[in-house]
Length: 213
Image 1 (tube, rainbow, N blue to C red):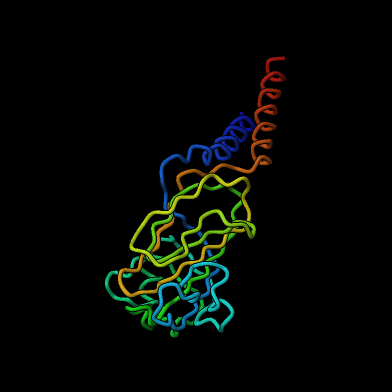
Image 2: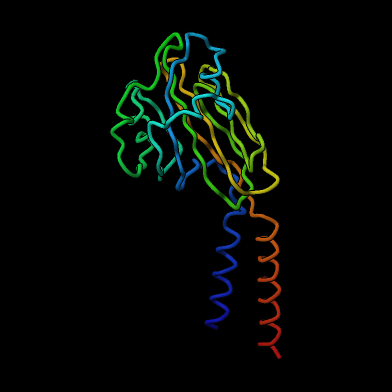
């Protein structure tokens, strides 16, 4: 009986992620680097584009460390990088003194770029709420692209073919507001996890047959 309870608990734990149909905010531990530079008073300037080609990504980072918590950031009218990154209720590793500064300014005079990366074995689908631009990459390939400065909008991304290494580039380029929220509407295990679930079910059925015999 103890073995049966253990098998049931294991299988329930494996199947819980399969039911993730309701939107939940992306949460976990993320590596994050923050860059800042001039927007050159031009919305089309490469420094204001949230993509891997942004020249600011090749400069020295204001901050590089780990963020643990929700990807649910809102400037709240403060326009300060540190306030923005702690608005989601999470925590940052290391020294954050350099982040206690203005995040962006109007007329594209100052822009801040956030490079957020994490690994996840699940195939994800969801929506990014953002102002200004964002791009989302999986294993080096683009899965959501809205890199140009914008008013607050939603950018969806469909169910990815695999899990792996995700990378989110966000730009704050033209003053208030500054918002970034990632909602996951679907999370599906890799095929290997589904195969393991199948083996577990087969094992449970076999165990029950042996008990009857």
